[in-house]
Image (cartoon, rainbow, N blue to C red; front, top):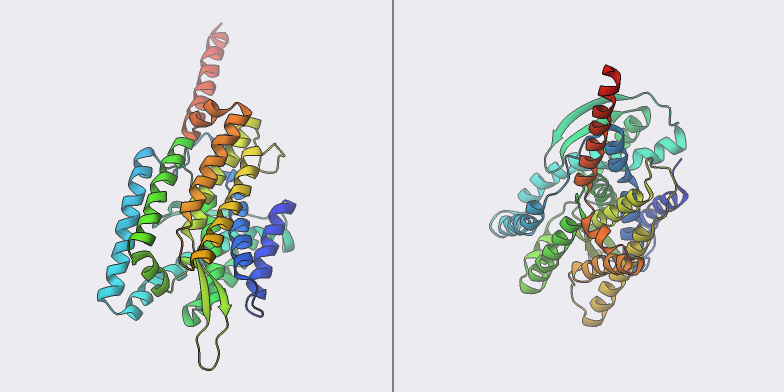
Length: 367
């Protein structure tokens, strides 16, 4: 069964998605609740990464290295500027057609992965039959499809959503795909270590400031690209004479801090030596970081309202998440342990411990 908090987050996302299509809810309330719920769900699901390593001893193939963290803002800048040039020199409709076709396929898979646990909890059981297959997915690496009745049922509905979104580009369908992509990203991507996470956040802190304040590139791509790279929150519904108006939150402002929050949750699990997803354990770093993620979003909204201008959310989210984790570690006297935390080193130590145990047992058997 899903944990009650995780279930509440799913319920909040479903409620906001449905209600926003009928009534105009406060935009800032939608933004904060949606983003926080996604980060919470993705982080708790990411405990599967640790459980998989504990059970198999295999390292996570998606773990980011220091080199990756240093290069990420540069590669991201290149891709962002490339999209900007495509929209500037080519037909907007053709560019969107190609990109949305790709995102429709990716969105179908991510939507199935994100919501199949809900379908399983409601209509199926945990003892389903499994049929597994592995494949390579662009930008996500090696993925494994675990076919179950609940997964297949969710997949049929996801394909229907993809077809509907491809035809209509309705904001509700866009948000459904954006939510599922974000949850899947947070769940499956690992920073590998706290230091790598700090490097990545610092790099993207300056990346976001430059492309939002220094140029019109970020805003141009965000407003012209019809794909689910953002969540849309309606400020005014369409009328006979005017188009609908939306506020925007980029998925990067959810996924990037989200994978850092997820790392801290796995650090909590490491400290408590938890070995299963459902096992209760103290989560001080996770809960404090979630709280400060919310405060970072609140700060973003307040500044945006005061200056009536688009804001780089990472300008506020990075200090909130990074700073709160460091202060928590200092207060708890665990700063050295936090800075040294590495999921790669954890894997190596566990493997070395198993090998050493085998070596000590072999002489006994010979005797």
